[in-house]
Amino acid sequence: MWERQVAKPDPDVSGYATRIARDWNVKASGVGYVTRFDVDKRFLDSYEVQQAGGQTILEYWIPAEDLDEFNAHIAGLIEVVAEFR
Image (tube, rainbow, N blue to C red; front, side, top):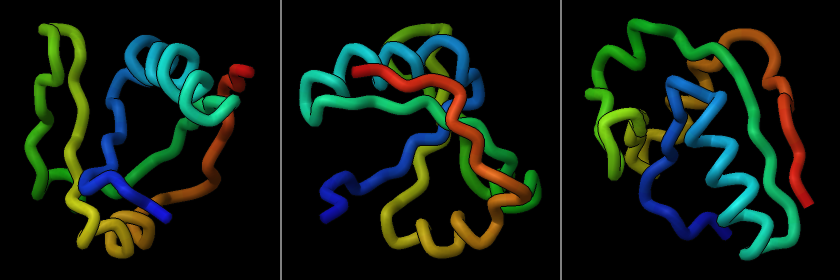
């Protein structure tokens, strides 16, 4: 079951997402993935980019109740760019 209240797409997938997948998700569940995908900019424009713990850590906070609409605005394929175990 999804327990987090916010999905946090990372506009800079190279750094923060890698640290979360490698350092947090592996410890919590044994595996972590970094994914990359495009989302309709008009949809994302309704959310502010948030600073999450450091000047270089930026992410969108999408409330859980908006996830179905968020998913509907994913354009193209979701690509797994890294896997950590």
